[in-house]
Length: 323
Image (cartoon, rainbow, N blue to C red; front, side, top):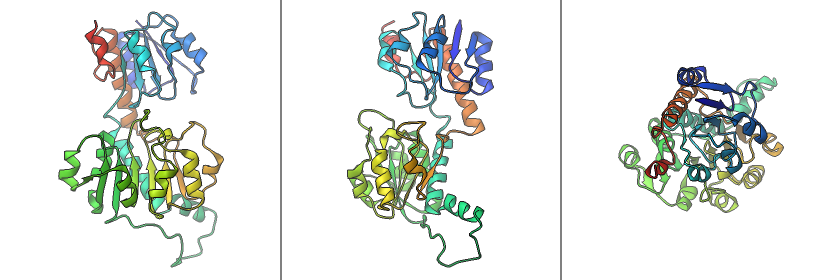
């Protein structure tokens, strides 16, 4: 069968696909326009896409042969799963393999903001370091502080567990109780309001959906401590970006660490010009192992789907009940 890959992914994944099928890979390292995806899909049986690709109803229905969509990402809000389901097309994602990489990036951002690493690096590079100064670039202590985890799924759990060495008091919000966190860390499940009011460091680990869009906005920022740090490695629109910019400008929280943005790849100049925010280019999963494992998982999902089997990481398995 024939598979269209919207952008080059690590070679091990592509090699695995080539063992079973013919593949066509977008040769340019950029996000394709909608019409280009539709053109690339012509005559294809499978689509391997990225979180940067918006796969809407028009694209899904543009190719009658399409039998499988494999997303190279954990989140799949970029795909109209409902339309795919109505067409009987399985959709898969790549969970699990990037859990540690993403949770480690959240910690990297937390440390970078708390200890003003990026600001200090620039200060030194600009030649302003004239010797030890007792009042220079004061940051925040981490040990013994309260850590708030919004969303205690795979990544949120891995992130929270990494706090063990810092003897932190852990609060979390989630629809379900997390026995692992409660047993390992004596973590406490609380309301979002309580978490925001009591936490020194807050890290977001929720999917983007109707319930989480602008989950953190002006009202929520008003609840936070003045020296709180917010970290977001989930999805940009979970945070009201303009509200965040305003509280950072007014220094109503200590700072923020962001790997995602509300209107990616656009990053507002107002954010770029602030020194109390650390910015990453949506690279939380960018380790050699994680990105390679994601490619292999996406390939295995695709191969299974084209065989007519339920892909290992199918997000709409209900379509197989109808077959």
